[in-house]
Length: 380
Image (cartoon, rainbow, N blue to C red; front, side, top):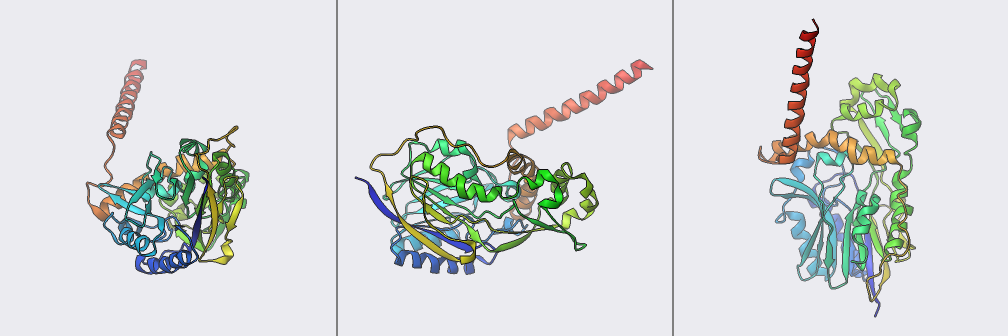
């Protein structure tokens, strides 16, 4: 028979604060949701630290034996709920953005964010697996934030889950303001038509697109977000700004200041519970601030299989190019350097395949140089 469960989605201010303070705030919200009858409570992405592109992130990572995981396990047991939330997890010599789901009896499931968004790659690496948590509530598929913009990841869960659980904290990077040390500021409108074309894309991902993919999958979903307005430094700012210059060369005058530029933006709305048809049952606005919303959802007695063609992504190609390719490539050195400075030189090892291709590129460049030198002498 179909089952009904009550789910709560928690919205927290995304500005960084000490973990002890943020866990205390999360505790009050989780307790309120449990008192309201929620059986599953979902906290936002990086709920224990807040969201910022800061070198401090490298020292804020935790292990499975750390403060946050212990707090989640204890809270789930004490309130007799399933509790989920993500944190920067130190696992051997790498850091992942790990979504943990705890059952009241102490069982735990883990999902690592597959697609770190842009500058996030400076603080954690991506995973490559999906997670289906076989809980007493049902089989739960798990994603984190920017993962939801990738239809192929939704397809991997097709026919395998009763419910989708998504923890997010998306800054509205599709509508930012960049601030420079000389007092000037820039928005996408001032950065040319190509950049302006990306305005509003974040709201589409966590609005209509998430609802459409949920409806196609045929199961309910819960998504959490942060709230407030953040102002953050940009990792490897000069290299990041160079990617903008290809679209707006006239902004080259700002390049000398780019390493000290900051980005300010609101968080993207999208804290909600959605039914199997993609209809929003409960949702919070950004203006409601730090609170929770909840709704009952019905889980089918048999796992639904998608019908019809999967809806296409609503994000423009340029968004994927910058978010999945250009900005991550620029910020990988930030990740490796920062992690080694914080935890030792053995951290974030370069993969053997990376060493191989680097060596081949080096040999190719040397061969080209020698060939050019030989050819030049032959022509004399």
